[in-house]
Length: 385
Image 1: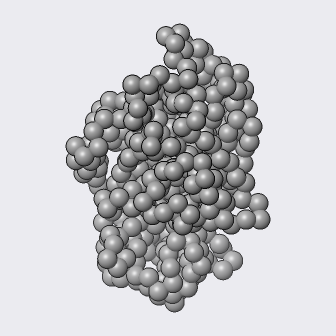
Image 2: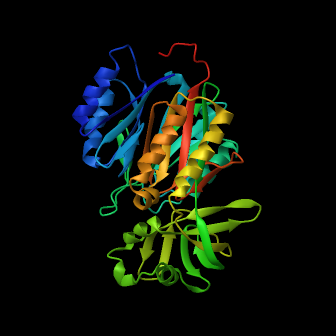
Image 3: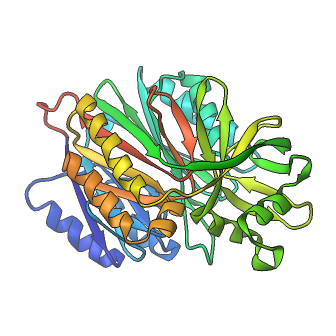
């Protein structure tokens, strides 16, 4: 499988780069696209429509290509894959739940391929990523390869979206379904957190909406612990800014702990929406983001993972926006070193939540983590049409 990554400040630059990439006979069939401005979506889609290239797209405010990132560019990973090896499905949430639309996508994957793998992205900052995993894997099985995350945006003007050639939604789910008998999909998710203090109990919650912790209003307790006051929040979505310095670590029986970050505050009932479920009765610890040494730890884990999976034709990285806020320029170092391990075309975005595989090979929903998906054609001796 041949793959190439391109970037541009405008749709016109993307069009020029696309033409240049095809001068050597490269004929991409699919483009994965991350961009910050919804006003560019239609123009970008028109460019790829003219070349009969399918699109998997999501919003970002911080997107990267190979070794560098910025907040202004459009980034695209183009792949030359036989059209019968993949399928793109797009669903608007509407009156259905996240789990219901994810289940419908899982059913399409199961009926299309014997061994489907999924790359997914979702619009909507209140989306519970665990419901995406449950919906798909309750249909296809726990062993199904599943990677992706929640689309992101500028924290000052939060509106996330996903799109494909003729569809756009601020509250939808897009999936690239791959035939894993032809395209292997491997990957790994890792991050870092340091829990401090005592255990706390989630005493009232509904999925990813937490009402009380230790029988205290969730918003009051979180603000007190993080040293903030309600007056410090200009809007309900300012909770996202806490992700750069504060999150909750969910303790789980016979499984490794997992991070959850606050994304939305309800000033009326003092509940907090997290980017993942926190079941009633579960034990949590409050965490401060680890120091810069976490970058070295992440690279060591990915280097060990490469020894297991080997090379890749293309790379897609979903990294938490909270990491970008906290680490700033250090993120360039992390992105560059991950890319150098495989030295393959790569794009990625800073997301509001990540889906990837843990060390046991199970797909989970993460916060403050980077999730890497690696694609490689199995029958690479065949030409792609």
